[in-house]
Structure formats: C-alpha cells, structure tokens
Image (cartoon, rainbow, N blue to C red; front, side):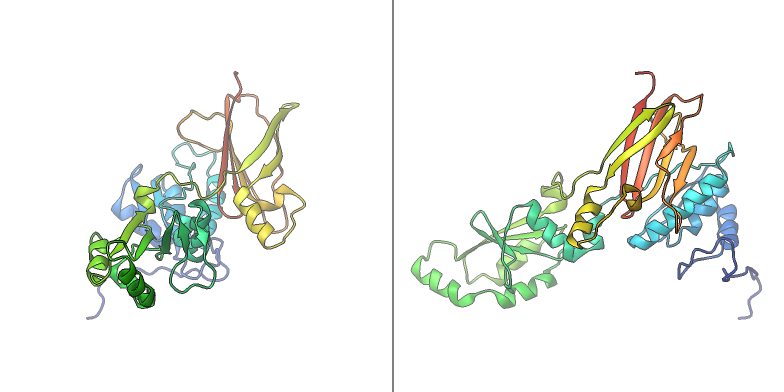
Length: 330
C-alpha cells in the first residue's frame, strides 16, 4: 500500500543539541507528537524500555508525570544525566514535574550481572563454596546447594544440566548401604520458579530417595541483605552545606577488587541534588550539580535564605543513591 499518512520527522543527527550518543535514540519531536496525541497535562507516561530517556525527557518538558524502566545500566545512567539537565533547564517552570527518583527494584543487581550474583548469594547465605565442581555450587547445613540462573525464573529445562551431572554411582552405593535414608539432601536456590519444579525433579529421580528443598530468594529470603548502604559526612558551616566525605560502599568494594585507588570522593559521584524546602513527600531539587567530563561536583553549596527542611541526594557512578534529610528547625 502507498502510505497516505506520513510523519515527516528528522532523525537525531550528529549535530543535534539533544543527542546523547545512545544507539537507539529517538527524536524528541517524534515522542512529543505521540505524547501530545495520547495524553494530557498531568497524566502519567510510561516507557518500559526507556533507552536514552527521550520519552521521559519530553514528558518532563510537556508537564507529564513519567515512569521509565530499563535493565541496561548504561540506559539508566544516560537517562538520569539527561533528566538532570532537563530539570535544571526547567527549574523555574511552575507547571513542570522536574523532580524524579531512581529506584533499584526486583533485585536489579542480580538481573544485571548473574555471574556476580552467584557470589553475592553464596556470601549472603553463608554457603561453603565448592570450586571446580560441575554439579554443586557449595554446601549449607549438610545439604548440597545448586544455584539456578538468577536472571530469570527457574524452569524444568534448567534442571537438565544438574540431572545429567548428578553422582549416580554414589547414589547407588548409598542406597544399598542405607535403603531408608536419602541418598542426597539437595537445596536448589532460585529467583522464582515454575510451580511444578520440585514435583518434576522428584518424578525424574523417582529411583532415588533425594530430599529436595527449593529456596526462592524473592519469596523465602525477601529480607536478605546483599549489599551495604552508602554513607556520608554532611555538615552545615558558615551558611554552607558541606559534603565532607562520601562512602559508596558497593562502588568502593568494586574498586578495591579491581585494585583501583580514588583520591577524592568526588571522583565517584555522578550528581548531587538538593531540595532546600523538602515537604517530606516529593523531592523537588532546586540545586542540581552534575559531574561533567573534566569536572567534579563542588561538594560545598551556599544555603539560600528561605531554606526550611533540606533533602540531599547523592548518586554515585553505579547509579546507586544516598539520601539524607536535614531538618533546619531542630
């Protein structure tokens, strides 16, 4: 068919002011037309694969609330920086939603880096790790432990490798020596699973008495702590807010493992946002300090005369945040 309705919209060329060098970036004019035609001022716009954050940036400029999601860390960092710049441009606009939060949800660290996640699980659950084993990942309280892929729900097909590598000769020996005792006590750890995972495994191993336990981290260990929160030393001196020290624990741990040394905490900071009159519910930053290519954040900020309650948000290079509220009237 010959198209009878065409949107003549230019792509993001290399000279575009809004270009952020993200491979799949869409033109703002395209998203502006879509958002205007499908929503009104104050509506919520949701982009579940936000990429470079074009949808969120345009929604902010058009006075829409917005939600964005992406599993790619680069997309999160690119969008965060972009929205910080847009909010800075719109800070004097009364009818715009310039405040936003970045959330790490659904155990994002696991979905982002499954290999590192296995080590985090082993440490958090205090599993005695097995090195070089092609069957089990470790031992916990006398039970053999197998960790399923943690970037998705565990399925019956994920058990095929485990079943093919089980020590059946040992099972036969244990079965003959102690017919009434389990030949193995097995714990399977996963991030959610198919409802019939355990019955399916028991059916496939019906010739052996195996004590099978499944631990679903999302449900059974929802309060398990995998990482440490960031810390900071912030003081008010001579009518200035002074961030003296900042300790992004997870970033520091990663840098330590890579044997990298940081001289100044500012080298680990992507941005500092401050709301001088925080209402206790929604942060609306009036000061946005973004680390540019060759510059660091300032770390010391003049406090305005009309200040009430202060909310500070520091975002590190892993896009993890530290937040602190300072009540001036206390």
